[in-house]
Image (tube, rainbow over all chains, first blue to last red; front, side):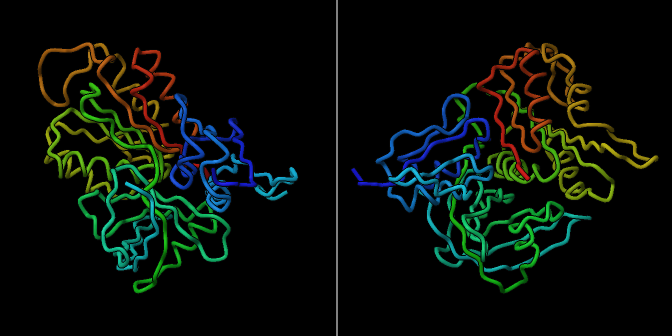
Length: 76
Length: 254
């Protein structure tokens, strides 16, 4: 358990299966049978890695919110 | 292969064609990168939040260096950064990443169809060099590559030479806006694929006479490039009975 505060989600419509999120935060993301990223658990990687994974997504498909529900990434 | 951060130094920067450039990076720390053909690096671009992905276009056998293909036309911060690099410049990236790699041999992929558009050729080049040159893979392979204008053409001699040297490899280049004297395929690359492989049930080994085979269940496709091509080719292959798990794709997003 990492006590991570950030929560991530994947906008499936935007995901193109580049898998950079899987490379950076392999305990948080994986590709499903349709080669779309899905969240495995919110507690697998630390917040820095989860945020970097989101920032690495070429389509901005990963959304990061903090413990108060504020969207951290993509920036609004 | 766990992902980690690498430092490298620009050894060479080549101008290939109208909008395409190639950057050769010699690894410095650590000095070796183990990766699978088709994977990419995540480049740290100064002043940019996050990273930018670039497919490694050199084969894994060149593990002391990597080559990247740059398409400068999108004008993105990442491509402009790579285009600005000069010999001696240092870069930093994370690698290896990506799932667009060759399936394991026991997967039953006996005939390989590679389709690329534009800079989507980058990971495909790594795959073909790895398969043909390094692993001496003898499975029949076809490469169909779509570009727009004649002035966009690069690596033509290299792929033509591979086709001459390796009897199991066939190369077809398609231009969607060809000059009048263009003698090769024209139109979108999907049309070229359909023209050359109209019926997979009678697909035979390239340039060899022999029995025709029911190929739809043993053919595998590796598609890299724009979304339209990937969707169109996937649809056609599926209609012709190619198994979905044997259609591998990498969409380039700009």
